[in-house]
Structure formats: structure tokens, C-alpha cells
Image 1 (tube, rainbow, N blue to C red):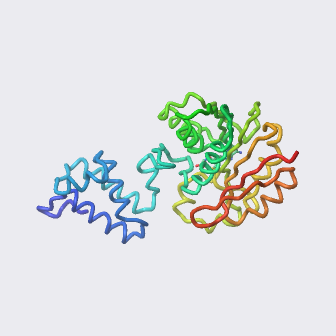
Image 2 (image 1 turned 90 degrees about the vertical axis):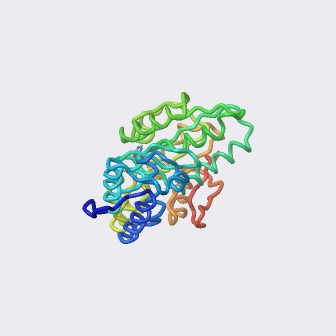
Image 3 (image 1 turned 90 degrees about the horizontal axis):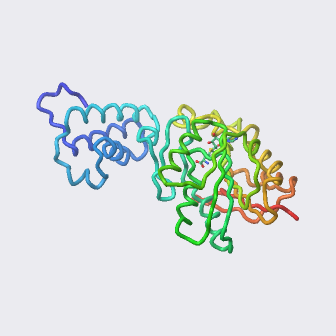
Length: 295
Ligand SMILES: C[S@@+](CC[C@H](N)C(=O)[O-])C[C@H]1O[C@@H](n2cnc3c(N)ncnc32)[C@H](O)[C@@H]1O
């Protein structure tokens, strides 16, 4: 987008077309969507409104801001960090650099918890979310039940203080006064018992790290992703230590990697957990394991 082309007037339409094309050349997935999202953010207009203001000329200051964003995105900097937010389970979630960008697969875990709670007769429920990141799991569960007859309290842990700060901002956004945040290595500083433990722990195998796309490896926190040999480190810790934190009939909901079900089932058996089900994601891959303690 050159400034020195005389008489070039940059309308919203022209910038949208130019940017989509530029992103395409830089191998950015969904180039039009990326262009629209960046322009919506800078111009503070919804995506639909961009089209209603198609022929408006952009002020130089806005154009300069948009250019800066386009350049970063074309260098494969994640869109969600640029925008400072993402969408999860239909909710806007703040996300900043240093914190894992929530993935749509994790909505399968939320669905599993929602289904379980809807079918139970619980009026009160204490949920522990291990490795909360931006806090998407508790927020989505809270939003689902906020005007229903079930009183839910959350405890969330993360080892990264950046994650807890980001999560706290999101909890405030959704007026959640029912969350206790603890900076802790998994369960280390937790001292209560729960009806439900949820976790989407890091689960990338050490041996798979090199094959990850650069957009992830270069920008997202390694501590939120990497999990030792076969990616099992955190499942081992959670399953070996969580008994003392669970009520007798409690449930554990774990997000798992598509190839990990068999190994996690072995760990579950070793630590006297019964696997009640494994839910698939929208690509028909194993994604969420539901467990309870064996008697
Ligand atoms: C895969 S991310 C999931 C984040 C969030 N729950 C989500 O689904 O978007 C894993 C999270 O676990 C946190 N984490 C990593 N090691 C941890 C540990 N030892 N104790 C607690 N949290 C940890 C990371 O900082 C990160 O926020």
C-alpha cells in the first residue's frame, strides 16, 4: 500500500481488496476474514458495517494504523494477539501475548461439562480448572448456567502469572465474582475438594515440537504447549495427584491430543480412574476424556 502513488484514494473497499490480496500472496489462511477483522478493529466498525461504509475514504492516521497491523499479520503474527481478543463458545475473550490462544476444540470439553451438569440434579457445584490460560473454560460454563438453577464456584490455577492476569481481566469482563485464582504448579497450592476438575493441559509431545507451524512455535508460550515424552507429563501428574481433591462422585474432564487416548486410558487405569467416555471433536478425533474415581 504505497503512499507515493499520487491521487490514490484509499476507501474502505480498496483497502479491503488490497489487503485480502496481499495476505493471499503471503499465504495467510482466510485472507478476506483477516482483512475484515483488522479493519473492524481499527475503525471500530462491525464487519457488516464495513460494507455499509464501503466508499468512505480512510483518514491518514487510521490508514497508518491499519498498515502496521497488515505488516505484522503478513509476517504471520497471530491475528488474535493483534486484535487482543478472540471468540470462544460465542463469547468475546481477551487474549494477550504470552497466553495461549483458546482453540475451538476446547469447546468440546465445555460441551461435555455442560451436558453432565444439565443431566445432574446438582444445585451447587465447585469446579477446579487446571491451567486456565485466558479462563475460557470457566467463563463458558459460568455463562451457560448464570441464569439457571445451579450455583457454580470456580477455582482456577495457572503456573504463568501472565495467564492469571489475562484470565482475571476476562472474569471481570463477565462480572464473575465466583472465581478464586491461584498461581500454582497444577494442584500444589490447592486445598479444597471439588465436584469437577477440568483441564486442557499442555499436551504437545517433545518429539513433535519441531513439526509445529511457525505461527504457533514463534509466538505462543512454550509452557502452555509442551508436555514431555508423548505429551503425557501433565496427564500423569493430574491423574496421580487429583484423588485427594475430588468428592466421591466427582468427574474429571480432560482435553487430550488426537493420538493420546490409549496412553491416557492406561494412566487412568494405573491411578484407579474409570473412563466414562471419550468425546470426539468436529474432525472426528478423540478430544475429551471423561473420568471418575473407581470405588
Ligand atoms: C493448553 S493451555 C490451555 C489454556 C486454557 N485452559 C485453554 O483451554 O485455552 C495450558 C495452560 O496450562 C498452563 N500450565 C502449564 N504448566 C502448568 C503447570 N505446571 N501448572 C499449572 N498450569 C500450567 C499454561 O500456562 C496454559 O495456560
